[in-house]
Amino acid sequence: MNSKEMKSPMISVVIRSYNRLNHVLEIVQVCCTQTYENFEVVILDQSSDNHFKEYSPELNKLDSRFRVVHREPLGGTGARNYGVAYSKGEIILFMDDDDIPIGNNWIADHARNYNDPNCIGVSGRHIRDINEIVRYPDIEKAYRRCLTVSALIRGRVFTGINKVKVGVDWLHGNNSSMRRETIINLGGWYPHVKSDHEEHSLYFKFHKKKKSGQYLKFDPAPVVLRRFDIAGGAERRTISMRLLLDHRLRFCHWVIGEEYPIRFYIFYPFFMIYSFQIAALHMINGSSFIDSIWIKKLGLKWGKRIYVAQELLLFPLMIIKYLIIKRPTWDGDIKALIKKD
Image 1 (cartoon, rainbow, N blue to C red):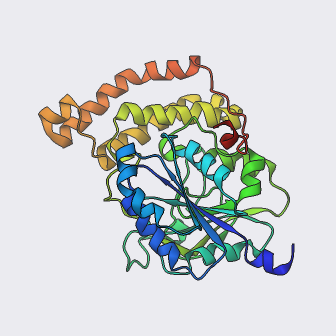
Image 2 (image 1 turned 90 degrees about the horizontal axis):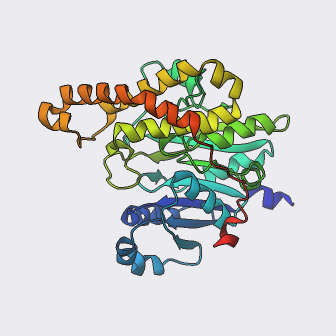
């Protein structure tokens, strides 16, 4: 590989979308303004047929750098793996369909990190306001926790900091890039988990198998504006607590239990208590779910609390279910995914 190829690797921007093609077209417009030239965009659309037909005329006008793959819903990790399979680039750059990259050097800011062959993956900065400088009251604490994993294997985010950090534990699923070869060699992401736990399985494997000197990195230069007010997508903010708990238990038993079995089963009660606490706090403070008789009759404040108490009574049955059922298998053959279609 000559020096020019090393400095300008082919970048595949992968956008997974579900009924948000209008916002995907906004991302496409930003990609068209990029200073970096050696890139393609793979839009993995899982929208309803009617939504896809509505935006097909505009999608068909895109030039050859843009490819649209319309499929049935695959879930977050399944779509991520398929996006890698359809991509041609040396580097895969993931972008969520409800957020927007900032500036015309977004792709270039990811690409330059790969001049170092030991850099395997990069997570960029997330802002919540276009004029944001920093949103953390304790900047040093935020820096220490940025993209780390807690003792109970929960990913900490803190990707709003404005300082490079080499040697992070994992990469955020949005505004992150990674070498395609590494993703394929590690077998991609375990596809049977959902929601905000979908990113971690690959990075657990990476840290076990990485070569000396290889690292993941946080770089604040590539910036994406988070847009939490956009409807559609996976709708984590509107699903029931039962589903939140189900997603968490899948992650615990099928990912943590597989990659860290000794820690998981020695401290099993703590993992279960923590799982319920995470779901309960999200339901009370971060969810807009209202389809509960308690919420409808008593209002958000007290209705949500009684709803959480109801789910606590049923939680032991969910735990028993995941202790009994068999973990679904995944062969990790990403290249074979599109051959099977």
